[in-house]
Image (cartoon, rainbow, N blue to C red):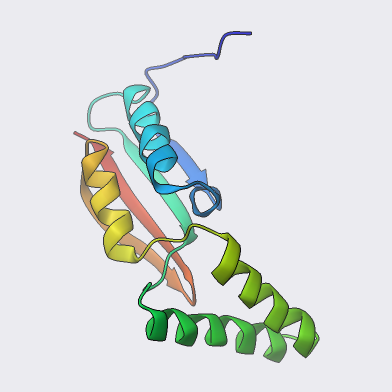
Length: 126
C-alpha cells in the first residue's frame, strides 16, 4: 500500500516520537514532514533531548530517575527506566536536535518547553 502524501498543511506536530528514531531515519522523517508543509508553516516537536557526553548523560538520567521516585514510582522501576532510556533510545543532545531541524530545511527554531530530559521546539518550513 502506498503511503499517503497529503498536504500542503498549515502546520504539524511530532510529539514524543523522534527520540525512538535513529539519526538518519529521523532526518528523513523531518524532511518528509517539511515537504508536506506550506512555506512558513510551523512544526512543533517535543521528545527526550539531553546532553550526550558520558558524564552529562549520567547526570540527566539520574535526575530523570530522581523525579520519578519523588513522584511515587518505585525506586528500582525508576532506575531501570532511566537505564533503558540511556541504553536503548537514540537520544540526541539539544544542539544536535536543533542542527538536525536545520539540516532538514527548517529555520527560526526556538525552544518553547524544557522539563528534565524533555525539550520542545517550534520551527518553520523555510
